[in-house]
Length: 201
Image (tube, rainbow, N blue to C red; front, side):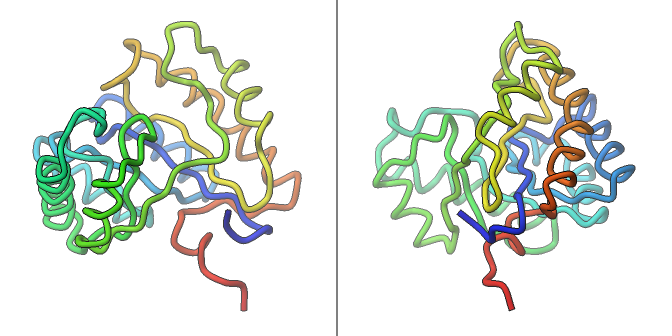
């Protein structure tokens, strides 16, 4: 949990040239920033989009090279996966990432150890939109997020359908303004993980 006056907004599975820019547009319109957990293979394919994310004031973090369950990978393969993704993100963003989130939220012992070796802090979430399914709608995403929404929490949405039903990201995109308004109405500042996890001064 982070600072009780803040909510961290995070997105997984990008970057995607078809969908990520649309999320960036909504965030810019609402003057909100977020953390994007990126897949290294997508970063290698779309490095300029990573630069755009960073240029707009967002934070980038590691989500692995591809969207593979780390339970099926040994310690060395896990380390290489995270190291490769970290290197690609560092090159594209111009600075090293601070955080990582394992695919499916499966935080294994080898993943934790690899994170320590690579200087990456593990982050999961406290509420999510269930926005990866074919049945997701803007209303279902909003209800799923607000069911667990609390000050100090971390919201998980997806800015890509890379590991989801085709086009599922559209439900999260449509729900995003309502999620931001809900946080604002409750007096919480929405932003990326870095400031969210820093102690209040």
